[in-house]
Length: 495
Ligand SMILES: NC(=O)c1ccc[n+]([C@@H]2O[C@H](COP(=O)([O-])OP(=O)(O)OC[C@H]3O[C@@H](n4cnc5c(N)ncnc54)[C@H](O)[C@@H]3O)[C@@H](O)[C@H]2O)c1
Ligand SMILES: O=P(O)(O)OC[C@@H](O)[C@@H](O)[C@H](O)[C@H](O)CO
Image 1: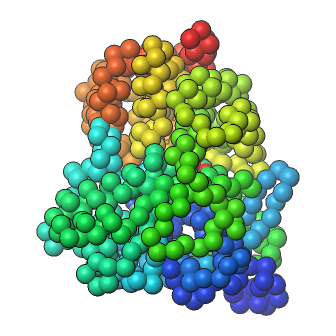
Image 2: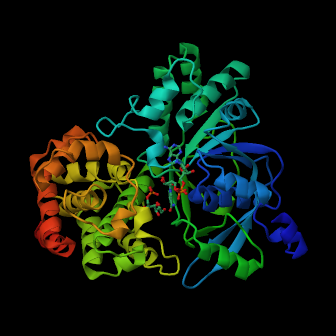
Image 3: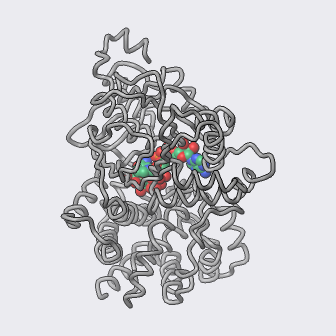
């Protein structure tokens, strides 16, 4: 891509991160689409404003598909901004080295130990943290974590490699470091810190190392936001048309972008504020607003849309019954559970979400948003549901969200949710299929899922909520998703 850019005489100053140095200061785990359109873009822009040694080492999890494509393009790739009123293509130049977690363990550990590296960023999906649905703590029984903890094992999970790398760093130079989660997690920094500490304790780390970790490695909370769908052949065609060159690893993204970060960096950071990032003491409030209103609403749109055979989020959101259910979910079930940031206008935010979800040019897929449901809903549903129940109110739309997820991703026997739901990936599918194998009715099926450990016991123990989830699943199976949503809407309006 570099040669092609030179041949085309594209102005290199126009490349985001044109002033990025050869030296790397950031290690990124999870070289997926979101990182490439969010933190990487922010880092490139930050360095254009204030040069610094903040090149990125990008780590993919298992596949060499993205790393090979990027290596062949000298780390360059395009971000295609898709907005009804503003479409443009930027080339990003900030990655300097690529590794694959499943194959390059020793090099990754060496990179984490290297004091030149000051920040680890993560977009490994909610699933990559291996949290136990019941307790919210690291699930040391999950097969990947168990394998990493085995005597003499070479770790392959991000948590295992981070702990091994930090252990080597402590021994070699004890230079401070920051671990910054950019995933859609509740209190992302605190949650990551707890998982890293729990892994280190389970790995029998020394007290000296644990004390150093506690005092010298920081885990800022952060709220991340930009809708980034998976690229398609159409994304490559957009680049061909705009730049006249072939990019094997472009990323599509909406125009909107937001990053609110707690300014708690142990060893410095890029000037991300120059790229528009906000440093704030109210990060956890922003996280809740985003996780519950945007992501919680998104999940409901995806599961109702999946059952209604709508291929994209804008097509789903355009169905009146889905728009009505989603607005009620946000206003009645989610909003009362959030302590809002100062000067924050929730109605304006909700209206902006409906505009973003209507982006037909972006065409985000229903199946992308509906994938990984068990790990995503855990971050979004339980606390608001428990808050409503404690106030004596049934969170109708949250119960409907859970029922619709089950019907899409672990459908009761004999129920065909259709091709859109079939395309949703459920990481706990095997466990949940085994849990429901003996079920002879929709009630037994739903209860087996609720009792399988995907949600906390305090929610699962609420009989009225259990009954509602069963009831909506029975309605979806017997009468269809539109009928179930109509009943939930009517009940929610009476609350
Ligand atoms: N795409 C978005 O719109 C968006 C917006 C905000 C936040 N996010 C966050 O970013 C995450 C990734 O989204 P994406 O669009 O990049 O998805 P993606 O599918 O393109 O990438 C997911 C990345 O996570 C890695 N991963 C998945 N499971 C893992 C595991 N068990 N262990 C280690 N690594 C694992 C994958 O290898 C890949 O690098 C989301 O789950 C979310 O937390 C995404
Ligand atoms: O990325 P996930 O898997 O946590 O959730 C799916 C979508 O809700 C999410 O990707 C949004 O597009 C994103 O969070 C917007 O910032």
